[in-house]
Amino acid sequence: MAPQTRKSHASTSSDVQAPPAHLNIHLPDDLDPSTLDALVGAPANWTTPTAETILSLYHFVLSQKQQFDGAFQEWEQRLEQKDADLEQALQDQETYRQESTEAIEQLKAEVTQLKSAGTEMESERSRLAGQLASLTSSSSMSIQEVEILRRQVEEREKEKKTLTDTLDAALNRETRLHST
Image (cartoon, rainbow, N blue to C red; front, side, top):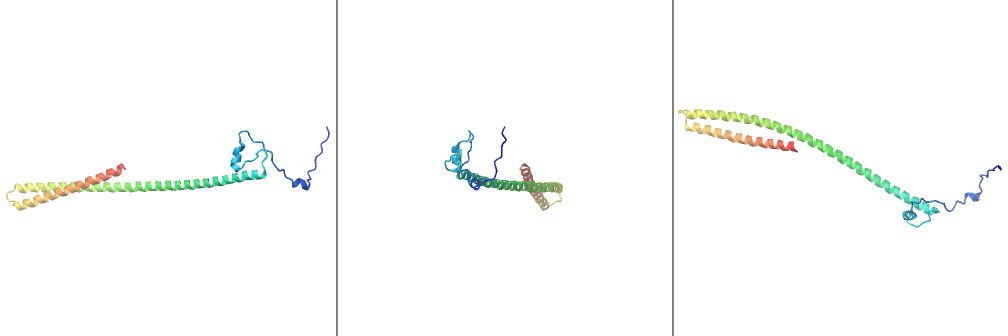
């Protein structure tokens, strides 16, 4: 075999200034050149594209990247807003739960107090009814005293009814709060 000699890598000034006019590119079979034409906005020879064609494709890719970046930032902002909305909703729910628990506790205390007052009123009514019965049976009792005692019994009955209505209303509120 003959020895090979290396060519000198020294270039002449004409070699440096004369870049190739076109690149030779082999397109894959599944890539339709009309698709590339649509992307750059003009028909081109894609097997030997010109610098202008490559720059058009480059500008298209840059514009697509900018659009993608803008859409990505918009989605990030939407996601951050959704996170903030969710956090606010969770805080609102916790506040509502605490307020409901406090209201239920207050209603329970009210119900206990009303039950106690109802028991006291019932004993007072019984006591007055007993007094009325003993006074009525007594011959020395005047009609005026009987009327006074009857009015007192009627007043106690009205108070009892008012208290019972209030107790029922409080129980209804408690039931509604528990069902919510």
